[in-house]
Length: 153
Picture 1 (tube, rainbow, N blue to C red):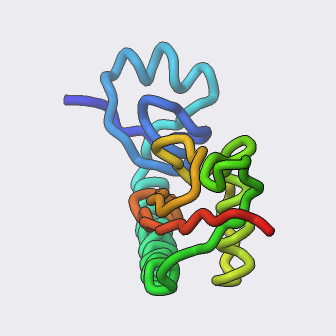
Picture 2: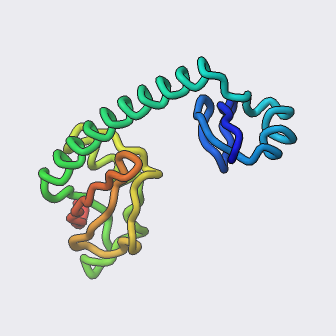
């Protein structure tokens, strides 16, 4: 049987601050409590931790719902047109279409800001045509966007 503790700080292997966890007695006694990472769980602390966890789940569910709505809106808009300079053949781009380019075109067409680091371009876009990119909106909510890359000018 383990020892119940409440984390005072985030611990990578256990969870976030305020989380109630059960660990081996020696781990709690010899490491977590002396390092100031946790305190032994009392009935009051257990109740408080459970309340915080319920509140966190409620907030997370709300954000997830909003993310699902955003995903639906982004995917319903159809193609996002990106204009890029091309070479003499009319298809080969000068450079590539970047995450920042995608973020800017989504912001201008949909009015929704997506962090460029959350956009995944699976294959480098070096030619005109239709491509698919992924945009992570929330932890497990990913929108699939279709890009139409056209010659600028």
